[in-house]
Image (cartoon, rainbow, N blue to C red):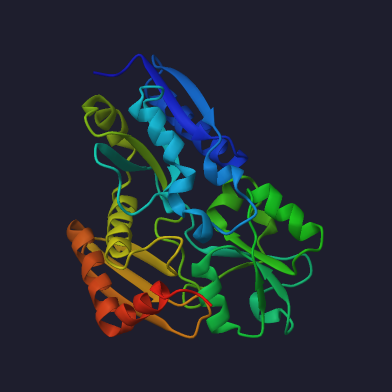
Amino acid sequence: MTPKLLRIATRESKLAMWQTEHVAARLAERHPGIAIEIVGMTTKGDRILDRPLAQVGGKGLFIKELEVALADNLADIAVHSMKDVPMELPEGFAMLPFGPREDARDAFVSLRHASLAALPEGAVVGTSSLRRECQLRRAYPSLVIKPLRGNVNTRLAKLEAGDYDAIILAAAGLKRLGFGSRIRELLPLEVALPAIGQGVLAIEFLAGRADLAELLAPFVDASARAAADAERALGLVVEGSCEVPVGGHATVTGSTVVIEGFLGLPDGTRLVRERAEGAAADAAKVGRALGERILARGGREVLTLLAQPRQ
């Protein structure tokens, strides 16, 4: 049965609100009789901006308060960027992708330089993602990587203030906020595999709410779901989190899913990258197999090194 009222929990950043309003509009189009209420919240990840996520708890910092709202019946669904969702959901929660995937690639943004390759030696690049740092240091060891936190607008303002020569952001967020023209280069997948789930909108809800699963089912894009299933299965095997430099990207063509993934050290000195393909209907199985291959071909040693205390 379609609910009469749908309360949507969301972070209050401009990107999160855009995503939530997009979801609300799509749902209202299909179900004009539903009253929709947006419940804005500030998460711990939004409040702690002076340290990289890897140092303060990782991905879950952006969604814990939203999950509490769902559990306490203060909201019915929560809207996330799937890349912010930990690989393993808490017991009693479910998640579905919403709509087609936006561009999954990372974007190079700079006021003076046209591309990563055009940056001079010693140029300062902003990102707080260990995944990006690992791949950038691997491909361009002469660059200086410095932390960059905050929402999209804050990060662009820091670039404009001259704190960085360039910054790396998710292309999806820039495009959704109308900043697509700020992108100087979309980083090739050969150079930078994106975060697991990057570009996918995700809806989380209590697993027992069959009415919500039915409500959301028409908005699930089959290709986005298969790609997300493959990537998140990979992440679960290789312990994907903000503390571990890991990336993955899956594409679906017809009935086949192809996924590439990597695991590495933040300084780029070790990086294990592999590829797998299989039936899209078995996307999670394909992702798990890729994860096991990465671990077998050097990934376990990388995880051992990551677990050692940093000097």
